[in-house]
Image 1 (cartoon, helix red, strand yellow):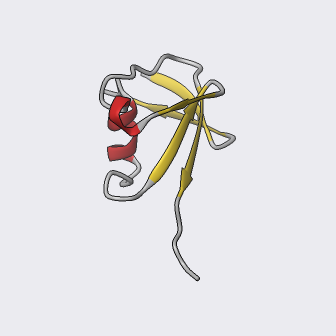
Image 2 (spheres, rainbow, N blue to C red):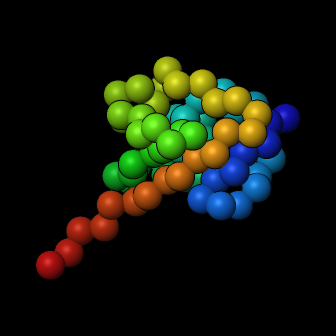
Image 3 (cartoon, rainbow, N blue to C red):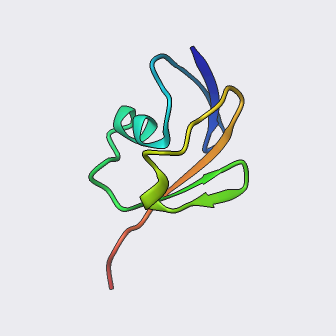
Length: 67
């Protein structure tokens, strides 16, 4: 089990290793999102390679289009 702070909310998840795993769990893989881990913005190209650790602080922001 891993405990994370996601957008200010504490969550506990199993079988979670990468940012991509987190986005899949949150049903956000098809959305345009920006992800920050412990104050560092992680490019989309690195979501599958960036491992998450117990206690990480994550901010996820969805891009919303409009005019």
